[in-house]
Figure 1 (cartoon, rainbow, N blue to C red):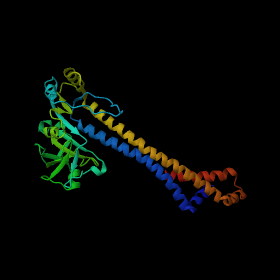
Figure 2 (tube, helix red, strand yellow):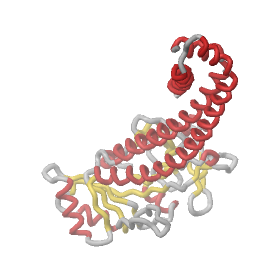
Figure 3 (cartoon, rainbow, N blue to C red):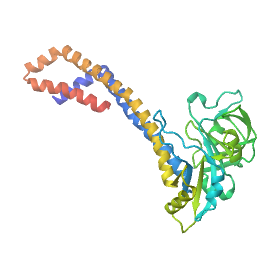
Length: 333
């Protein structure tokens, strides 16, 4: 009966292929949803771990928790004077501040957003580019130099290749105010990555980024390195006690986990959204397959009657149909 079931599938190649296709589409959507969101999670987790690899402690504004809409809210900027207060604390070897934004747009020569069509963000950073602060900077300079002035910018290597940008070219940047042109003085990589998928990088020195993002006199965070005989946990306690309320003080590892968790929450929403469509595809596919097999059974009544005449039992005929469905289901999935 097994040989008969397999022969029946081989004899009806088109029906078998179309039935399997319904299963393939549903399973592909289901597995694709998990592969996509897990890949995003791992990529951003690597980004955040790399960002704080040389950081022992991170100071940000007080964590606001969740907004009224139930979404995670970003910590508010902190006064730039906080940096000097932190540097004066015992156990701090090195400290620097930075600003960031994910809503900035890079503009092409036609004035249109370079990556606007795909909905990917431009990750804008104001970083301390002095050599002594290089341990806090996850970016690697590929060409040129770090920006140092109110009209200079560095971009990622992937963007430079895609848009055929070179050192000395100008690029538009639109943030909170009118778009402005900046000269490209550096091309960077994030670690060993030429690009972050569809996302792009825009790097400025801290004062320029503060002016561009309307954060004059404020920082989004302070990154700190501890002296050799001070642990990150001990330094967290000292800094928290010195700064008082209004600040969130975490170790570099905790900060990386926190930011990775925020991305994981976002990708979970995407995963459930995609899985809902996959579930619909499987549900519809199940009806298609059931109807196909039902029609097949009705069309093969004479064939099954012949099997019964030759001595096959009812159960054997039923097992033949079930085996055909099982082979299609397993092979297609």
